Length: 315
Image 1 (spheres, rainbow, N blue to C red):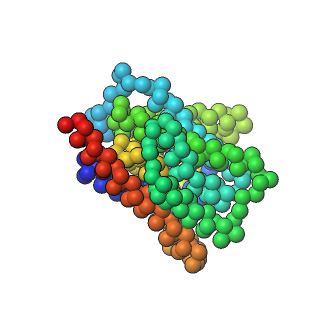
Image 2: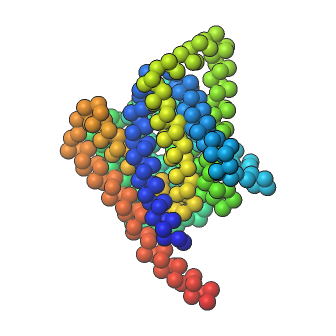
Image 3: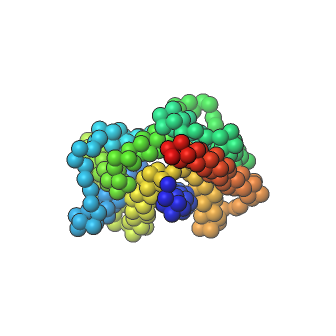
């Protein structure tokens, strides 16, 4: 494997975590001005429109002929469609804290699915590292006084399905990276997300006679800035980089980086919202970072040894 490509994948993985960490802040701002479904529509309209510019100018070449578009559609159904729809309905029945706790388990679900469908092997130390990063996130939420209320079983089930949807996306995108370029997968995903969310949103407003409310948020500069961040930075950039990462790195290794977003959201809350950072925030953050490092470093020696054995066998 190209070591420069792998190093770039690690840089992108950390960048993604930082972007997603800040996205919580901009999502809160956007939802003050628009309905969740309208926010998703404008978010994916912005990301699809911006990526369409280099595609239309021929700077980005896309070729879908003869490629498994059915699998690509299944990918888009998992993410963004499934993930964001399940999240929106899940949060109607459960708290955002419960969502944060359950989302932390995404690396575990990804590890299981990657082992089943991609035959990705992880060492015992890697498995323990993944659980350590998950424990770090859960520790922070529990120490804040958050917990999972089992009376909200509908919301909890839907939020757990967001983990499954994102894990499924990670595994399938890793598989499709052999047939599609990162740009091809990203453009297809964003296009499907934009079209479906727009149809559903407009149909909803048309049925209730509130089409004027659909465009009303566009008069707010704050909303437009939030949508630019969520659409162009948080959706387009992270989708491109995630699809690149999955072409270079195992799905189980990439997924654990998502827990770094918790650290970024804590930092952004402290910097911009004046939220308090306590000792348990710091302890949880150390556990998360240790888990990420362990997952990505403790399996490298074994992988390298296997590679040498393979080369000797081929020789």
